[in-house]
Image (cartoon, rainbow, N blue to C red; front, side, top):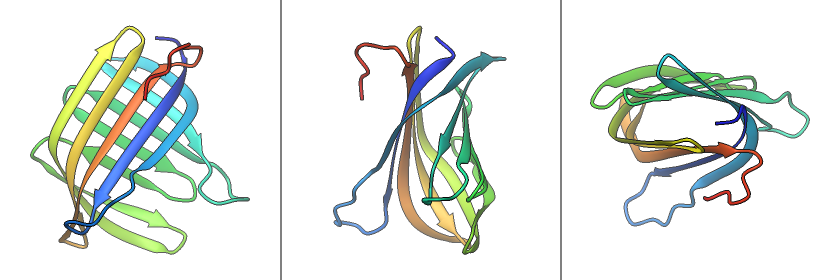
Length: 148
């Protein structure tokens, strides 16, 4: 795949049973590379008007996914099936302790498309708060038929 890609990130946190939830969606240009059996993505995200961009790094492999954010918010989330990973989510308003347990994972790879979906349980300060999913897809930036 080309180094320059379009990245589609889609996530959902289901906090209340029966409540209609809107997924968070983002399509941004970014960079892609493949090293040691893992796919890597890098992109910038503006979280607040006038603030510095937050740099996002995503590592995807059959073993799991890692998401790192550096900037206005800082976090290093590790998604591994059946294993609880603890992290701290730091924002300008304070820091939260998070626990992440991946309950399902699917990685689809082709020459011009990488797509990974992770279902996970999210804990905040040792209490289960949501069942979530995160889907990350990358295609060449010059792709004529970008598929969401």
